[in-house]
Length: 98
Image (cartoon, rainbow, N blue to C red; front, side, top):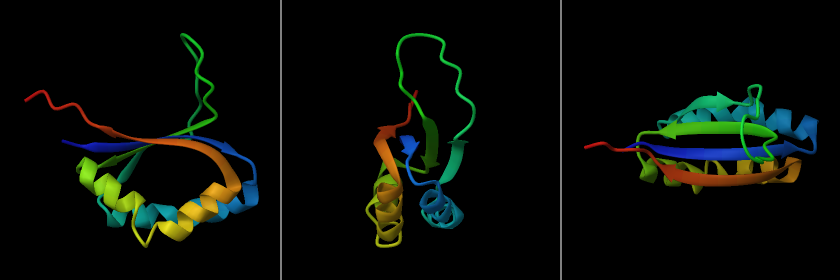
C-alpha cells in the first residue's frame, strides 16, 4: 500500500521557501518518494477548502513516508520550511482494493 504526504502550504518568506524547494526533491527521492502535485493551479469546485499551495508526495508505503518525514536528512529542511511557511501536513494511507 502506498503512503502519501499531503501538504497545504502558505508561503510567508518566498526567498527561504525557494532555498527549501531547491534542495528537498533529492531527499524525497532518497526515501522512494516522488511528487504527484507540486503547487499547480487550484480550481475550487465544491465547499470551502482554503488551499494555498497543494503538494502531494507518493511513497512506496506509509512507513516510507514516516521515515522520510522524521529522518535526520529531512529535519533541517523541515525547519527551513516551517520558518518560511504556514503549513498543514498529513500522512495518508493509499487505497488497497485487495
